[in-house]
Length: 67
Image (cartoon, rainbow, N blue to C red):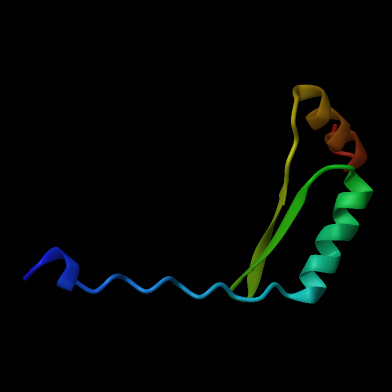
């Protein structure tokens, strides 16, 4: 069998973003002043908060009252 005769794997379909989760992510970004990713996984999900320096992490921890 020739290489060109092999079937290429089909790309996985990307689910359309949930408008409610997108809105929630935008609200979190405004409140925290940094990039936030909200993803649904099964019945739950995850929230990812990005920081860009040790000082930025400290600022976020203070906002979340974790220090």
